Image (cartoon, rainbow, N blue to C red; front, side, top):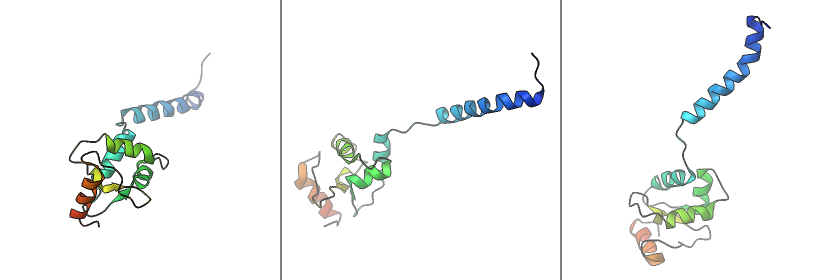
Length: 113
């Protein structure tokens, strides 16, 4: 069966759009939740803090505050200031490089308290 150009365009265009869209998204670098969290925490300015919930919300999942805590607990990169992420209830929370005392001391040195 032969089709004219209009019929072919009508049949093929939706598929071409989907193929282009698929290629576009697969060529983009996929950023994981952990990478988004680390980028957000890396940009927290000295002298300020964010809560685990705020970081999770900015990273795209407002219900993942515990996951942010896990990511910060496993972080040993000195370029990511995980001591600037605190709990929503006002407590500083734990710190993987010395505990709550060291975290509070670092925040006091930065002028947060």
